[in-house]
Image (cartoon, rainbow, N blue to C red; front, side, top):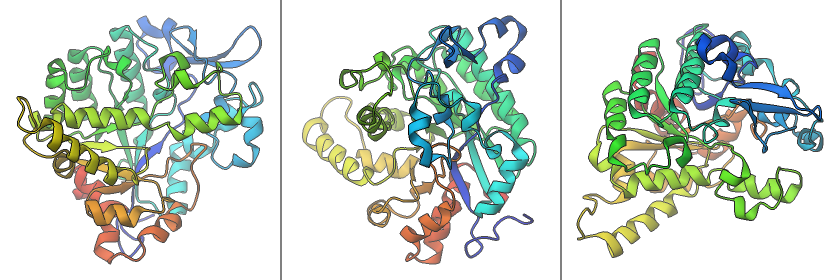
Length: 396
């Protein structure tokens, strides 16, 4: 592509949440030998149905529907994608998901300079693993893989480290190792089981928040997929898998619920108060809800908490303004209202490529929402905010 920043009136365009589609043998290749018999892998069960195996146990929610883990450009064949056994993991792949050279071609075609890369299989296994040493081994393997993937072009492909919080010492050590390898941020699951059911405000996690702050690695809370009995929606899901359109609609609509809850807990339990250098990106929940939610949180803090022991010194919205950003979906229709309420420095954007709910030509969709803003504001949202937030200013 040449020099960065040739798009959209010389803005550096940064995709704040893209994904890779991990090779099926990633954990067999990258795990240390003592862990390989417990590797994450894809296999067919006795009924011939493909499933994701995590420490030898299947994942009921995605059984027979691994084609939906990718699926961009295949939305016209949703019935087949969601029919158990009709499409495999390989069927849902596109080259830009697993081949770094092909991903660079996608970036060129889409007018994107830089992408921050998150996992796909990696957002499915936490909450299914209680063995902290195994979970740490899984993350080490993935983090080595994603650094290798991004080595194709370190200017444009930016690895996000996957960190598990079951053991804080292991988490700190892996974050430090991954940072040395070139990872620019940290993906955290919002699932309480991924941190041993501890609150995010638990003082035992303070050492990790300090480490992430010292390393200059922003956190990214991202949606996850788990078996129904571990899902906060399990009382509303009457079937054992996503087998009808009503259940799909319910789960898809509330897919970001856990991110919203985890983000709210970090605000209300004083994580940002005690760790003022910690940074957090709220991902794949859309952004249109946030202005109303922060207003509600401020109201509750004022009416029910202010003046009590342990009360926050700032409003929740002020902690967000000081330490957080949120990712807007390119096709959201209230983005301008969110910008008016929160400021143009609080929004980043994300393609979610190559997942099933993503679209190509995303910058055109985003331009419909922010095209009327001053050029300086557009440039912040298109990439400047990400550059600043992740400390990538030198990429300009």
